[in-house]
Image (cartoon, rainbow, N blue to C red; front, side, top):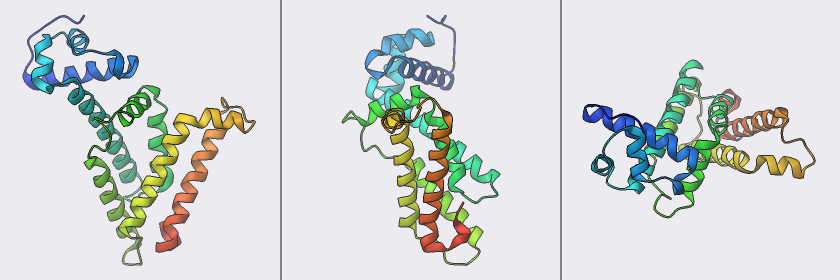
Amino acid sequence: MAPRRRRDPAESRAELLAAAAELIMRRGPDNVTLRQIAEAAGVAHGLVSHYFGSYAALVREVLRVENDRIETRVRERIRAEGGVPLASGIMDVVFDTLADERYLRLFVWSEMHADYRGATRPELVELVDTMEAGIRDALAGRPAPSRSRIEAVVLVGLSAAYGFAIGGRSWLAGLGHDPDDPAHAAEFRVQLARMMGAHMVEESGPEAAG
């Protein structure tokens, strides 16, 4: 148990979230209690309920923070690419994130529980906003893909990346490949980015591919 010390409310809340994220991702959400989180953060048990209300609300907040972190990394990658949201760069961020099995376990668990499924994800809307603005700037007045096309590309990319992270090893083995050979995952990432870029090109022309 972490030693208790005086903290301001913002510091206490942040440390509780950090302790919760570590415990939940390491043990799985079904095997963690509010009391264990309080002990790990070195605060009174009642303080967890005071800040988050319930365990369900705390799990949602942990997942929101992790999703915000992904969105921030995608934005940073887009800025590094001169504001042009290349499919390959975005997929690099998503695949690197999903390599963390703790995050993947939390995401899958939350999507399998009715209390968490269908939650509003404003960071996803903001990501599409950023992509749309970057594409339009890069095309400089030339025909750009529609909003619905960009959203479809994002959904395809996320579905493929998360699906591969969950079942990729079994599928590769079933195809007769060595699932421990990183070349297979790298090739899947490259091919997925190419398909996403090609789908975008159907509406906007070859300048938008990447």
